[in-house]
Image: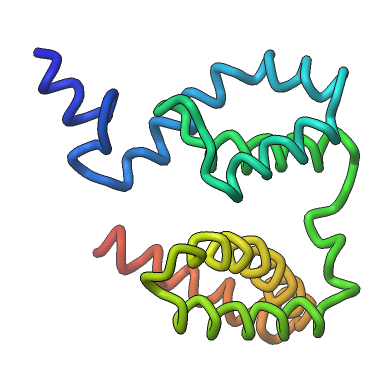
Length: 162
């Protein structure tokens, strides 16, 4: 019975359907909301720095939840708690996108090297900032916004079907 549950939920290893780690960790993080709220009240910036340091260097003592789940869930909670927009880095748009392009090339060139995970993690952070910048630029165009809304309706028809 344990092997069956372990295969589905990934209690001691990745779930049999690998992408379910995200759902599992999201549910665990939802259960830890009270703890996160307490941390936000007493040491918000310190914990943000600490958890991202642990994520960046891949130091994490427990399997569930993953350090990525804790770091990014807490980052979202911190931004909301501090009333900081997700798009606060948009003013550095060109620099962020240029740095991201450089990190992508460096990441691809250093695959297999011992230090690649650090480059890759920096790429994740810059990639998130770049994606947020691009999404705000796309949504600021009325024509593109209408086209995306129209395309979304078509997707609904494709999924639901006649």
